Amino acid sequence: MNGAPDHAGRTRFFRDFLHLAGPFWHDGPQRWRARGWTLAMAVLGVAQVALAIRLNLWNADFFDALERRSMDRFLAQIGVFALIVAGAVIANAFHMVARRRLNIAWRAWLTLRVVGEWMQDARHYQIAQIPGDHDNPDGRIAEDIRIATEYAIDLANSLLYATLLLVTFVGLLWTLSGRIMVFGFDLPGHMVALSLAYAAAGSVVAFLLGRPLVGATDLRQTREADFRFGLVRVRETAEPIALAHGEARERGRITALFDGIRPAWAAQTQGLSRLTGFSAGYLTLAPVFPILVTTPRYMAGTITLGGVMQIAQAFQQVTAALSWPVDNLQRIAEWRASVERVLSLDEAVRVVAAESARTGAEAIVLDRGVGHGLGARDLYVAAPDGTAILSDITLHVAPGERVLVDGDPEAAQALFRVLAGIWPWGRGIVDLPPDADVTTIGEKPHLPEGPLHDALTFPEAAERFPPEVASAALAAVGLDALVPRLAEIADWDAMLGAVDLQRLAIARVLLHRPRWILLGDTTTAFEPADADRTVDLLATALPDSALLVLGRHPGATERFTRRLTLRRVAGGDVLLHEIHARRQAATQPRRRPLPLVDWLRRGYDHRDMR
Image (cartoon, rainbow, N blue to C red):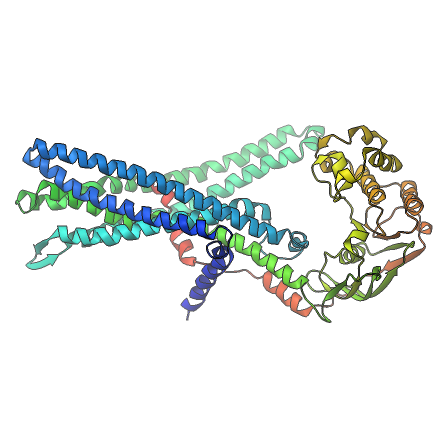
């Protein structure tokens, strides 16, 4: 009963990852190249194992030659060894090339896929409005996709190599072990049993020694994070601290935060010393233990010196293969965490995409028919959690009209986003003109990096608007000082203040001359007189264009031909029940997949064994 949910979670985790990233091998444009590099890795992995087997056989031949003091055989084995080394160099070099080529190709394909779906139809904005584990999408795309693809290939490759080693060397070690008598019993393959016991004992002891280390490591990471946060806080509040002459107090606080690291560091050092001491003994004994075990047989003359060394090398290969899960435990955990973060982002994108694609009476229908103009019919607007914000909104803006919609600021912004086509939560009909006929600008315009001329004319090409036309638009909104800087390349979004950004937005409207102008809090930084002049400027320069301003407007309402005051629905009534239930479920804690990994890591971390 208890195992069923975990099994289902594991199955879903791997299924979702393969659904997201697996098409690279069968649907992607580089699928044949991907298959080729994958096949090359597998073939080269088999070649590496074959070379390891040949090296094992060489050990027997070489030490037998030494035992017999045969110079001819010694020189012959030197030649064989040179060939093995050359083969290993070639196989490992080409394997590295194949793995890295596959790594970057898969990462590039998955990155483009996730970015393409995330940056489509305002989904990047919409997922920020819903609850769930999908924050910091930049880190998930830049770092977690890298880890998810790179570690998956590395883990799969090392697992294949370890499996081949185990399969081949277990059989070889079994054959080399021969038969021994223990308490009157004839035991075959005793070295295989010893290798299993050696690897198991090492893992168990490391697990027991490592358990106290986990708490100490967590405590140290917490104290380190507190210390970093304290430094960030000083940086962000530098001016208030300087004005209040609070340096001494802050210096003492930072010192106290650092002093908190010391006991955690000491506890971690104590745990590491125990684990490192065992690790040193374990790794030192590994090559010697099989020699000690087989020495009595060598002394009895039942095996040669070459046989002893061959058994020792095979023993090491088997124990190394058996140690793969423990050696890769931390990497598996990191891979699992990164895949989970990428899947969470993908799930959030799919959720908002599905909610935006809703149709029928329970959805917002965007009607972009020619001649419909701009407005809404029987529109109900909901918050992202499905609760009602606005109800029964009917609005139509005719060409040449200037309409102000104010009232509740949050409700006005929600209606603005619905009319902009980026807010899918609600139901009703929204009339929208063709995209080419409408300009929509919020509180801040989007200014791409580059020349000011390009930022001003975005999304149109700067070549469509000669410098003199662009200069006239800037001058009309009071940005004469920017005219000489039209060709200057800069991050204008960060360089300009709030007032200049909003003036630039109005200049862009003057350049594009749309038939429909939709503004949301676009004049909030203006003084009332400047806001009035802006409305007059648009009415004079674009007399046939419709102007709809939603939200706060510091100017006089008399400048508008019509005004609508919004009142938010009180009480938080649920408007979209299915979405509301989905949001409630998203706030519940979710079990992490592969819980066995977390349980093992609480007692063992392979990085502390190095």
